[in-house]
Image 1 (cartoon, one colour):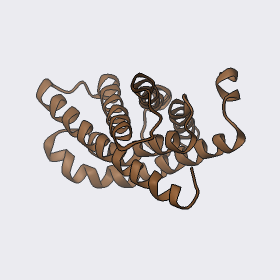
Image 2 (cartoon, rainbow, N blue to C red):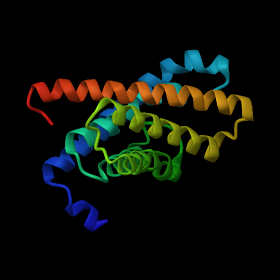
Image 3 (cartoon, one colour):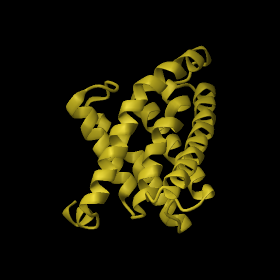
Image 4 (cartoon, one colour):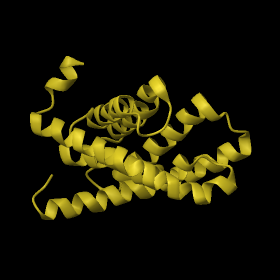
Length: 180
């Protein structure tokens, strides 16, 4: 862990903490609204809303440009949730359910040879994060039957991909102001 942290400057770590905090702050509002649509479809609200709070992991990678940024951001989110208890009731399993989406982003970007530098890699990163989060939460908590699980995964892929594109547009806007 110490070796991983040495790659990041204090500025990088502050960006990671800020993006993690924004993601955690946005999640309760977005998930509550998503439940209005997802509950009748018998799918978890996080599958639909995930793109809007997973996008902050993508933004962290885009701003920092270093491998491991998304994993570290997800881990910080998990720690924030454990300390504050404000989002969800996953308990210690939050370490898994929040960190794995970041790990999926970092792994996917390494395989693509990208660092959230274009719309395609942001699209894929957001999709991977939300699919991983949805699969993980289903595996740990829900155990949905096949049809609702497939519907949930399709919604998660779409939502995550759109969140990745939103992250790209936000990164472009921030770059116009010399941020990132």
